[in-house]
Length: 246
Image 1 (tube, rainbow, N blue to C red):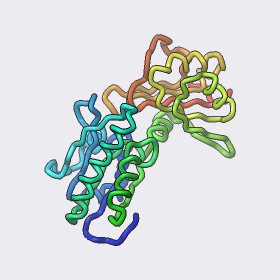
Image 2: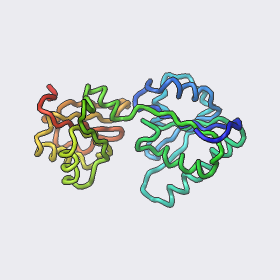
Image 3: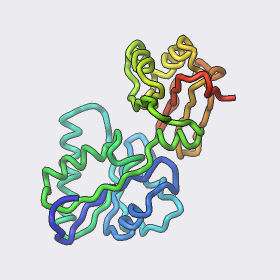
Image 4: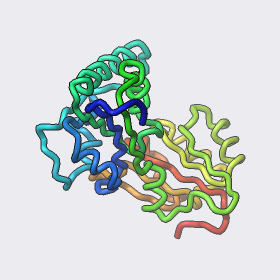
């Protein structure tokens, strides 16, 4: 939070990756907000972030869905976030309280980071508060009863490398790895874990919070022709001969 109170206030709200995991503080901010921005992917029919608020009573008239893309085009993304930040800044200057929803945790591999950085440039004087949310890997660990670190174990949260030898080195250097953004690399990752004799100590959570959610503890019998786990997926890896999934 920064700046002096002027009436307008910006709230970044991490909604987690399963319905009902919103914090009490974040819920109060949403109740107080005049406008709630809900990001929606161009390839999605509805806002997944908004779906995580299912069952909570929010006036639909306060919600604005905003379509976004993460296509890797730097100039296009910069222009998109500048336009969105300017729109939000105008609402803040008018004295409105504006919330922006983000899947998982607001500051962990989130598009919210781009928006926040741009908004700080466009309207540095406006008050801001960011509420954390439960990450996909924390959610996966809880659902699969998979400890993410005990005593002095080294735990790594890692976007999947393109090169499997780079992934092998990271696994060898840590006791626990939460592997994210796997995509089309999944068959290669599965093959590597098989080579390292770790499949029975791994667990996969895919499409978290969505109707097609899948939880798999132990991957030794996982079909090797499975191409990709899909959106909101995490692979948890533990190097231990005491934590087999049965």
